[in-house]
Each structure stands twice: as C-alpha cells, then as structure tokens.
Image (cartoon, rainbow, N blue to C red; front, top):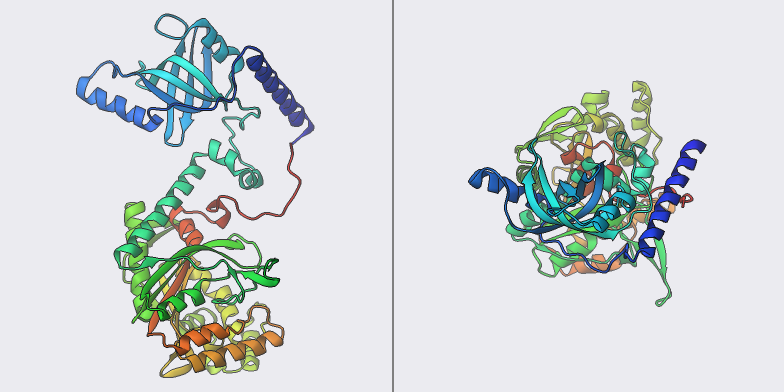
Length: 505
C-alpha cells in the first residue's frame, strides 16, 4: 500500500469512527444484542417471483424483515437505493422519506451515518422496480453492526492473494467466487458422507494426538502432553487406528478428519489437510478402486450435476470404469526406463543418468522410483487413472503381490495431474508386518526421517487376527480443487497456513 493509500485509509477510518461517535451520542446502539430476520434475501426474491407468476403486477402484501450487509448505496435526495447481502445472496432495498417510507430520523440515520459494509435489519414489502429488479420498500431500518473499516473498492475487488488468505473474512465478503468454492466444499463433504453411509460404512473418530504416529511415510509435528509427562504426535494418518477397529469387528469404517504432516507448503500441499480414510473387511484394493470410481462419479453428479468436469483447461470424464496402469509401464512410457531391469539403487541411478533425467537423489531404490514417477509421469495423468503395483520398500503396510513379491497390491489415484488417493490390500500377517516395521527402523537409523516407526500395539492387534481388508484414503482438499477448478490448495482451505508476519491495525 502506498503512502497516499495509507493516508486515505486513515481518513476513512477516522470518518467512520466519527460516525460511530455520533450514533452513540444520538442514543443509537451501533451493536444491539439481537436481530429479527423472517426471510433470507434468496427467500425474499423467490417469494416475489412466485407472486409475479400467480398474480402478475405488484407484490406480496406481507411485511418481511431482512438482515444483511450494505454492499452498495445510491442516495438521491429524499429517496435512496442500496443493496444488502446475506449468506444466500443479495437484494435491492428502496428507502424513501415519507408516509409510505421511513421517518426523517431513520432517513437521516441512513444518509449521514451508514456506510457500505454496515450490517442492517430492514422491514417492509416487496415489489419490482420499473427495470424489473426485486426490491424491498423499507418502512423500518435498524443498525445491527457499524463497520469501521471500508471494504475493497467495488470495481477492483480484493486482488491481493496474500490478503485474501490472511483475511479470509474479507475475501468472503467481497468475492462471490470464494463463497461459491466453500459452499461447494461443504456440499462435497456432505455428499461423501451420504455415499459412505448408504453403503453400510459407519463414521468413527480416532485420536489426533498419538503416542506413536503411523499410517504414512511422513515427518510428524511433535508436541508435549504435560499431564502425562509424555511426547506425543499430531497424526499423519488414521490408518492404524481404523484397522484396529476392523480387528475389533467393525467391518466397514470411515473417518473424515484433519491430518498433519511436517512438510513443505506448495500449491498442492498444506501441512494441515483434510482426508477421507475408509476400510472394508473382506475386500481388497480392487474393491477400493470400484468404491473410489463410484464415489467420485456420484458426488460429481450430485453436487455439480454432471460427470464431466473442467479442470485447468481439460475436460475430465469421471464416468467409471477408469483405466489401470502399472507403475512400471507408466515410467517406461514417459522416460524409457524399465525399472524392473534396474533392480538395485546403483543400476537405477545409472539409468537415470543415461536418460538425462533431472531428479533429486534418493537414499533407496524405492524412493528413487517414486521420485521419477512424481517428476515425469504424475503431471501427465489427466484423465482418471489408477497407478498400480508399487515397490515393496515404500509400501510397508500393503500386501505383496503373490506372483511378484517385490511389488505390493497398492494403487494411487490421479486426476488432472493431482494425486488424490492411496489404497492397499492391507497387510494382515503380523509376522510380515513386524519385519516391515523393522526394515523401516533400519532406514530411520540411517537418516530417513519419513520412515515408518515401529508400533508394537498395532502388531499385537494383528496377532488377534484381521480379516482380508481393503483400505483407502484420499485428500478432500484436492478433491475440492478438482471439482471447483482451482490450481492452488490454498483456494479451497479457508485458513491456509502462511508464514507469520505482523498484522496491521
């Protein structure tokens, strides 16, 4: 903000505080305890449209009360127009001094002391103007909250991305697209719950604070539980607790929850994110593919009204079935490297150099395979695709493929170049699981901060017997990105994490 803009803002703040002083001096409470709203603005418009269809001219005689924020004002002598907005939409109001309008005191209150951004309650009857705009003829007006800061200028709106994220309340007030995104997000989550409930899954809650984190390859956030004198972790996944419930006989469970991973922030990553995790007894990863296809298809049909969506310039068809591609084949197609013919880290590094690939060096063959895939394959997976058959060493919780024990029954789901989901045929052999955990421990001791820790209680649970199980998790935030055509995850998280800085007053 320039010095001139800062000075102009200071003048506006002083002017609004002076109006606040005048209101209080005149006996007007600028922040009353209660409001009375009989209709939303959307209901009022609908009521007027219905009257027009049935009766034609005029408007319903009912006196209604609306509440909302003043978004525009046009003062014309003894009559004025304004628009107010609530959570459902906006409507025009007509304020006139006279017998069929408001008294002089109310009109002067509106003309001299109210501003764009103030929240008011208005009472009156509905009508259409000569231009056909739904309007409320105001007979009573009450101030509900005086706004001391001006909203962004009407025609330019709120463009500064950092301000939009840091002051999301302001973004929601002035940007209709932002409101649309988060209303759509709410509908997506509600539709997902209905989808899972209709298929016999029950929603459960598992601990956010965990003595041993697990269920993913990630670095956790660490905190301290003073009452127990114990270090605990914010969960990185729900997986191990949900599978304990499968052991306990809850055959179909899901959780929509916050997970936390102590990693970088990017357009696709936020350290605090929302995930759906689902586990089904007597199922495998193929059943999870069918579940994912059906869920995305049904939610799109319910929330967006179509199975075809537009994402970042691509038309994507969510209609099942989706294609299945082995990781080996996908990497070979895009890079020319057959990873099965490079069975060691040294050989795979050699092939990377021969092909001139630019990837970060990785400590194990499995993580290097994953890095190659992420850099050269993932961005090209636009139409819905299940990538299957992952290396064993980066999948410590998945069952081995019977005919290829160096691979596991695992898939990741990609749409629009986004990784949206991860699923396994769950490992339920306690002895194999213990060995996998021990292998991860060795990687951890060698310096891999994301290696999976040993969880003795989880192994103990498996020793009681877990049925064949399919499990899956996918990111709600990225699903919302896809369904609302947003390139950045920050656009679909109400309060994304940002580096702390001083907040102006």
